[in-house]
Image 1 (tube, rainbow, N blue to C red):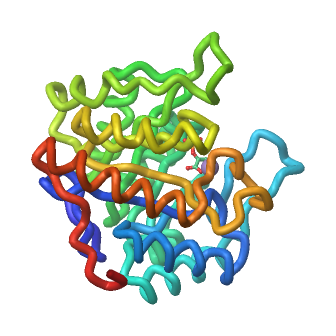
Image 2 (cartoon, rainbow, N blue to C red; image 1 turned 120 degrees about the vertical axis):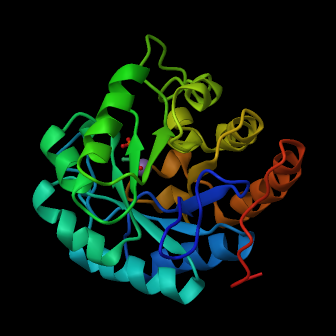
Length: 263
Ligand code: PEP
Ligand code: MN
């Protein structure tokens, strides 16, 4: 599976999607984009439309953020993945993004799944908060049946009885889905853990388990982030993680992206 930008999912090359939870300004986004590209990521992630539990929290900058994502992605040679929440926005988001993210809270938003199924842009389908593997795969079927076969699954942890971490990462789905589907599977350790210092070891474990990629939140100034600061890596922490990942990828016969733009 290949994005317009050239990034691939499901092959020997791991996809590294990194960037801030939310796009907060052109400066914040570009600083993150420059850093993650220099560290070897190949896809820029950032939210323009944020699904927040509270309506009083930062909701995202909308189309302005989409433009910033496009600009920074092009400037640093990165593909762009961003969430779309509303079926009415799919066409607009697809004009700016190389990949459409369906968030956890929308995994079973069937009208939205049908709409991205009709789009000609790859889709990143996050696992629902309490979705079984079967429900998740059936959600993917909605997209594929719509004519869009470019679906990547993203495990990001499920709700559990335990609140010691933000969610409970189900790393077992990585080898399980390898048996059940041809769709690539990536892991988001940031939303799974909710605690930045726990993200690197779980990212490493995910690649060791065979994940085809990672989604990692990186912010130039996590303490002042407008969303998900507690789980966001600094640019320096992300760079250190990438060096660890390089070694682990080799052990499982994979490689980090050959992303020359900023190296
Ligand atoms: C996100 O990727 O920032 C996000 C909101 O993730 P999730 O849908 O997994 O909670
Ligand atoms: Mn987030």
